[in-house]
Amino acid sequence: MDSATSDPRIPLGASADNGLKIVVVGGFGVGKTTMVRSVSEIRPLNTEETMTQAGAAVDDTSAVRGKSTTTVAFDFGRISLDAHNVLYLFGAPGQERFWFLWDRLFSGTLGAVVLVDTRRIDDSWYAIDRLEHHGTPFIVACNDFGGPRHSPDAVREALDLDPRVPLVDCDARSRESCKQVLIALVEHVRGHYAAQAAGSRQELV
Amino acid sequence: MSRPGRDDAPDRLYTLTQGRSRSGPDNPFDLVTLVVAECEPTPGMQSEHVAILRMTRAPAAVVEIAAELRLPVGITRVLLADLHAAGRVSARHPRLAAVPDPDILEQVLVGLRNL
Image (cartoon, rainbow over all chains, first blue to last red):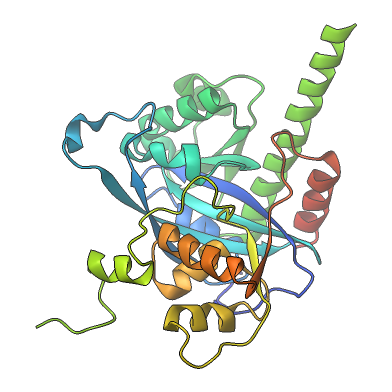
């Protein structure tokens, strides 16, 4: 295993000036923190945000009636890409009750990786639905837990996945595997916006 | 009797920010805004401000500062806005637009492939 175990206080280079965000979303225990740790140059850090429920368009507040704020904890790691660009990877809880967090906290996200445990596919439906709703480009990565392999077609069907969304296998413990997942995401993001630009050009013709 | 200082009681957080609980929509600090100190801490400065100025001798993102201070991101943003207004830190905001610049995406891909 080739995971980073370095000191969290490794400073960034003095010329770093552009922070970028990618979010890894998935159900409890699916390997989000493992994935962040595998590619991060710092030991994953944890922080929290207190969010008011007011203005959260979709959140069902019936379960927390009378409560005006919720605290959500999340993990993150860091990858220095070059002298200027620094990529922050956030592990975000995928459960329904945390989704008001997305709207504000993770705005401006480059894209998302939906990490899936194929033994518990249902956990991912809500995350995928919300990402589609937000128009956030994403890919689906199936974390290999060593169980029986599911064919990509079976997983696609179970997730009711748009054929344009890439589906990849990965091992969240492997740095190389996680690196390939991030590359697949950014290639997809590039294609997504290129297609959008081509579409709007066509409309103008 | 509770120990003063390092507890997470809400009143402590309010004290840190002089009662302001939210950073407001005009607060420009994104989670990944990189903050850089523009001066050294001075005697009598609030301890959180001292910690931030030490931490940002090299650029550090808002989330990193929050995690290091063990404070919620919102409170950290308020502290950073104060330091910024006083000219003690500068902020390098993310350049990502609603539609990402293809050049930046290319730089990200190159960076990832080189890992």
